[in-house]
Length: 247
Image (cartoon, helix red, strand yellow):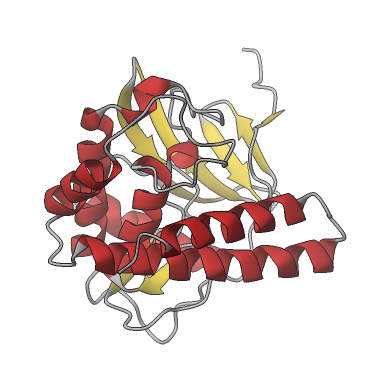
């Protein structure tokens, strides 16, 4: 029998990720046990679109099941913006949030900061570049390392930013096709079942982008990676654009 060969996976910008056969291996940290508990809890709740936790590999890395499919990268193909993807993503985000009400505990260690009110566990990066597709159908969500407790709107706003998408016209990641952004934002909100207004969501997107700009600027300084400053400028430009839409 031929032993599987380990292959580095694209992404994993913060934590190296590799595939070994049907396993995904990623560098572990103090938060890993909490993430494994979270994924076990979600699977027990019937959520089968997240990876199945498998504990630790012999070398100490975290082990997860490999979700087969395609993870899109920017510039995203137009089909990622299909309404079916938008509504499925909104439905799944609601499932995640409902399943994690009351999950957090003082002993849990999270890689990302808690945000108040800590209503649910947020994925914190629920976006197309962490979605797995097969035949253009959304089948899974990966990269749970930065999950942490926070308000529902924290996650919903970021999904809106990436998938509506609420980006400025100068953002190179914006789709080439034209979309009814406010109509798609209402569809996302209504499918999720949020009682937030579109203005509430827009304001939270601006807050998220300001937070991301600060975080990414700090990462650039600590790692010496000046390329990250391009992301900072992008977040700041999109935040400025969205402020013009907030009444």
